[in-house]
Length: 316
Image (tube, rainbow, N blue to C red):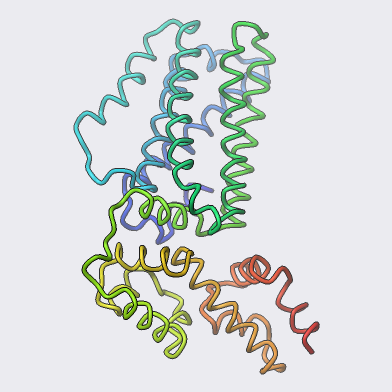
């Protein structure tokens, strides 16, 4: 369900590799859980099979390609990237006592890589503190999985598979909670990474004029009320590239595009909640550009600390 719903959204419209890798990651983890379920029912044939080893060696590279494409760490795709598939080929033919530790060792490398990537975003942590806490929770689960893999020779098989199944379940739970709480987290982190890694794209434009034009579009023309407003649509209106607009928003407003739009929408909703007491809370949320009640309530609470209804009562 997570794969079908999350990777069907417009956020991945131009990220085919990330979408495919995300599907592979989620379905691989689900298949591992199916093997663990059978083990707990007394059937250990799957966890001792080459299929299980193959799944272990699939999850880590899928995680890498998903993260790489979302974060846009590098724009080029080199044939050497196919080397990430070598462990999968070799791991299937290794004896189980070597395959499992090797799979976790490779997973360690990918987690270290992603940790280093996120660490480079520390200068921009003011923009999405809560989101980084959610990412830290995911990293914590990954770290526990790695420690479990290291401890494999010292613990019983039963303890290992039960604990591993619990950790995968926790990873799913954290992922769902994070996406529900921060539906734009992949966009926010990707924009921050783009600014952190890329050279400035604003050298050839008048940043002051562009900032003024952006404020005009958002405050006077209320472009944020469009449900379908995206970075590319706004960039087209401003006659600059999406990279330039993203950097402009990040440097001048110290926010991501999605955060800026959410703030404009919530501020307009706050005004309407007071000035239009007869209008329903839902109608106000939809008229300011939010696509659903849940998105409106989540954004409103995130920015104001209270529900829209409570805000109206407190100001009434």
